[in-house]
Length: 193
Image (cartoon, rainbow, N blue to C red; front, side):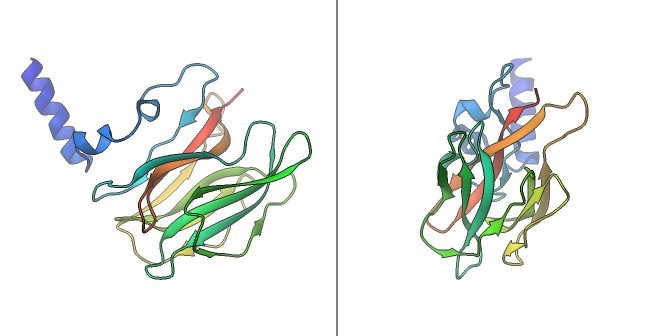
Protein backbone atom coordinates (compact mmCIF):
# COMPACT_ATOMS: atom_id res chain seq x y z
CA UNK A 1 0.00 0.00 0.00
CA UNK A 2 2.75 2.50 0.95
CA UNK A 3 4.72 1.66 -2.17
CA UNK A 4 1.61 2.13 -4.35
CA UNK A 5 0.95 5.51 -2.73
CA UNK A 6 4.59 6.57 -3.28
CA UNK A 7 4.38 5.54 -6.94
CA UNK A 8 1.08 7.40 -7.33
CA UNK A 9 2.59 10.59 -5.82
CA UNK A 10 5.69 10.25 -8.04
CA UNK A 11 3.44 9.74 -11.09
CA UNK A 12 1.29 12.74 -10.25
CA UNK A 13 4.42 14.86 -9.79
CA UNK A 14 5.61 13.90 -13.26
CA UNK A 15 2.20 14.53 -14.83
CA UNK A 16 1.94 17.93 -13.10
CA UNK A 17 5.36 18.88 -14.49
CA UNK A 18 7.05 19.21 -11.12
CA UNK A 19 9.24 17.11 -8.92
CA UNK A 20 9.25 16.64 -5.18
CA UNK A 21 12.60 18.50 -5.22
CA UNK A 22 10.94 21.51 -6.86
CA UNK A 23 7.99 21.69 -4.47
CA UNK A 24 10.27 21.19 -1.47
CA UNK A 25 11.84 24.60 -2.14
CA UNK A 26 8.55 26.35 -1.39
CA UNK A 27 7.74 27.19 2.21
CA UNK A 28 5.05 25.06 3.90
CA UNK A 29 2.77 28.10 4.33
CA UNK A 30 2.14 28.03 0.57
CA UNK A 31 1.32 24.32 0.57
CA UNK A 32 -1.08 23.92 3.50
CA UNK A 33 -4.78 24.68 3.70
CA UNK A 34 -5.32 27.98 5.55
CA UNK A 35 -7.56 28.25 8.59
CA UNK A 36 -10.52 30.63 8.95
CA UNK A 37 -9.45 34.26 8.54
CA UNK A 38 -5.88 33.36 7.49
CA UNK A 39 -4.21 34.65 4.32
CA UNK A 40 -4.81 32.39 1.30
CA UNK A 41 -2.43 31.56 -1.57
CA UNK A 42 -3.59 30.85 -5.12
CA UNK A 43 -2.07 28.30 -7.47
CA UNK A 44 1.51 29.13 -8.40
CA UNK A 45 1.82 29.80 -12.15
CA UNK A 46 4.87 29.38 -14.40
CA UNK A 47 8.22 27.73 -14.02
CA UNK A 48 7.15 24.84 -16.23
CA UNK A 49 10.79 23.81 -16.63
CA UNK A 50 11.72 23.94 -12.94
CA UNK A 51 12.32 26.60 -10.34
CA UNK A 52 15.80 27.68 -9.29
CA UNK A 53 15.18 31.15 -7.89
CA UNK A 54 14.47 32.31 -4.37
CA UNK A 55 10.95 32.20 -2.96
CA UNK A 56 9.54 35.70 -2.44
CA UNK A 57 6.29 37.17 -1.11
CA UNK A 58 5.17 40.79 -0.92
CA UNK A 59 2.03 42.27 0.55
CA UNK A 60 1.35 45.00 -2.01
CA UNK A 61 -2.05 46.16 -0.75
CA UNK A 62 -2.10 45.81 3.06
CA UNK A 63 -5.38 45.32 4.91
CA UNK A 64 -7.36 48.55 5.11
CA UNK A 65 -5.37 50.29 2.36
CA UNK A 66 -6.53 51.43 -1.08
CA UNK A 67 -4.61 50.56 -4.27
CA UNK A 68 -3.91 53.73 -6.28
CA UNK A 69 -1.52 52.70 -9.07
CA UNK A 70 0.55 49.81 -10.40
CA UNK A 71 3.80 49.85 -12.31
CA UNK A 72 5.35 46.84 -14.09
CA UNK A 73 9.07 46.10 -14.57
CA UNK A 74 9.93 44.33 -17.84
CA UNK A 75 13.41 43.16 -18.85
CA UNK A 76 15.01 44.73 -21.93
CA UNK A 77 16.20 41.43 -23.45
CA UNK A 78 14.52 39.09 -22.94
CA UNK A 79 11.22 40.92 -22.40
CA UNK A 80 10.14 39.09 -19.24
CA UNK A 81 8.37 40.17 -16.04
CA UNK A 82 10.94 41.35 -13.47
CA UNK A 83 8.70 43.02 -10.89
CA UNK A 84 5.49 44.79 -9.90
CA UNK A 85 5.33 48.04 -7.89
CA UNK A 86 2.13 49.02 -6.08
CA UNK A 87 1.27 52.48 -4.76
CA UNK A 88 -1.41 52.52 -2.07
CA UNK A 89 -2.95 54.83 0.52
CA UNK A 90 -2.95 53.57 4.10
CA UNK A 91 -5.84 53.94 6.54
CA UNK A 92 -3.89 56.82 8.11
CA UNK A 93 -3.78 58.63 4.73
CA UNK A 94 -0.07 58.10 3.95
CA UNK A 95 0.91 57.08 0.42
CA UNK A 96 3.39 54.18 0.23
CA UNK A 97 4.93 51.94 -2.42
CA UNK A 98 6.04 48.30 -2.31
CA UNK A 99 7.87 46.21 -4.89
CA UNK A 100 7.42 42.52 -5.65
CA UNK A 101 10.46 41.24 -7.54
CA UNK A 102 13.42 43.21 -8.91
CA UNK A 103 13.56 46.92 -8.13
CA UNK A 104 16.05 47.71 -10.91
CA UNK A 105 15.14 47.56 -14.57
CA UNK A 106 12.80 48.92 -17.19
CA UNK A 107 9.75 50.27 -15.33
CA UNK A 108 6.71 50.94 -17.53
CA UNK A 109 4.38 53.92 -17.04
CA UNK A 110 2.17 53.87 -13.95
CA UNK A 111 -1.31 52.45 -14.45
CA UNK A 112 -3.67 54.58 -12.34
CA UNK A 113 -6.39 52.49 -10.70
CA UNK A 114 -9.78 54.26 -10.79
CA UNK A 115 -11.33 55.10 -7.40
CA UNK A 116 -13.51 52.32 -6.01
CA UNK A 117 -11.94 49.66 -8.25
CA UNK A 118 -10.14 46.60 -6.83
CA UNK A 119 -7.61 44.19 -8.27
CA UNK A 120 -9.39 40.96 -9.23
CA UNK A 121 -6.60 38.90 -10.80
CA UNK A 122 -3.81 38.48 -13.33
CA UNK A 123 -3.40 36.97 -16.77
CA UNK A 124 -0.50 36.34 -19.13
CA UNK A 125 1.81 33.63 -20.43
CA UNK A 126 4.56 31.56 -18.84
CA UNK A 127 7.35 29.21 -19.83
CA UNK A 128 10.74 29.25 -18.14
CA UNK A 129 9.64 32.66 -16.79
CA UNK A 130 6.55 34.86 -16.65
CA UNK A 131 6.73 36.07 -20.26
CA UNK A 132 3.73 38.40 -20.33
CA UNK A 133 1.56 39.90 -17.62
CA UNK A 134 -1.70 41.82 -17.32
CA UNK A 135 -3.73 42.93 -14.29
CA UNK A 136 -7.52 42.50 -14.22
CA UNK A 137 -9.88 44.66 -12.11
CA UNK A 138 -13.35 44.03 -10.70
CA UNK A 139 -15.01 46.60 -12.98
CA UNK A 140 -13.85 44.67 -16.07
CA UNK A 141 -10.93 46.98 -16.89
CA UNK A 142 -7.44 45.63 -17.57
CA UNK A 143 -3.94 47.04 -17.84
CA UNK A 144 -2.01 46.81 -21.09
CA UNK A 145 -0.27 43.46 -21.66
CA UNK A 146 3.33 43.84 -20.50
CA UNK A 147 6.23 41.69 -21.68
CA UNK A 148 7.06 39.61 -24.70
CA UNK A 149 5.27 37.12 -26.91
CA UNK A 150 6.83 33.93 -25.51
CA UNK A 151 5.52 31.38 -23.07
CA UNK A 152 4.42 27.77 -23.30
CA UNK A 153 1.06 28.33 -21.59
CA UNK A 154 -1.42 31.14 -21.07
CA UNK A 155 -3.08 31.81 -17.71
CA UNK A 156 -6.02 33.76 -16.34
CA UNK A 157 -6.11 33.75 -12.53
CA UNK A 158 -8.96 35.66 -10.87
CA UNK A 159 -10.55 35.56 -7.44
CA UNK A 160 -13.87 33.76 -7.42
CA UNK A 161 -16.52 36.25 -6.30
CA UNK A 162 -19.43 33.79 -6.55
CA UNK A 163 -21.52 33.27 -3.38
CA UNK A 164 -19.85 30.70 -1.13
CA UNK A 165 -16.40 31.14 -2.69
CA UNK A 166 -13.35 32.02 -0.59
CA UNK A 167 -12.02 34.76 -2.92
CA UNK A 168 -12.03 38.02 -0.96
CA UNK A 169 -9.41 40.72 -1.58
CA UNK A 170 -5.96 40.51 -3.20
CA UNK A 171 -3.19 41.57 -0.83
CA UNK A 172 -0.13 40.82 -2.92
CA UNK A 173 1.93 38.25 -4.80
CA UNK A 174 4.27 35.34 -4.15
CA UNK A 175 6.53 33.29 -6.39
CA UNK A 176 10.12 32.54 -7.33
CA UNK A 177 12.68 35.02 -8.64
CA UNK A 178 16.15 34.64 -10.11
CA UNK A 179 18.61 37.18 -11.56
CA UNK A 180 16.73 37.30 -14.90
CA UNK A 181 13.16 37.70 -13.67
CA UNK A 182 10.11 36.08 -12.13
CA UNK A 183 9.97 32.34 -12.76
CA UNK A 184 6.58 31.91 -11.10
CA UNK A 185 3.79 34.05 -9.69
CA UNK A 186 0.68 33.54 -7.57
CA UNK A 187 -1.82 35.65 -5.61
CA UNK A 188 -1.90 36.30 -1.86
CA UNK A 189 -5.44 37.14 -0.75
CA UNK A 190 -7.80 37.53 2.17
CA UNK A 191 -10.74 35.15 2.30
CA UNK A 192 -14.23 36.53 1.75
CA UNK A 193 -15.93 37.87 4.90
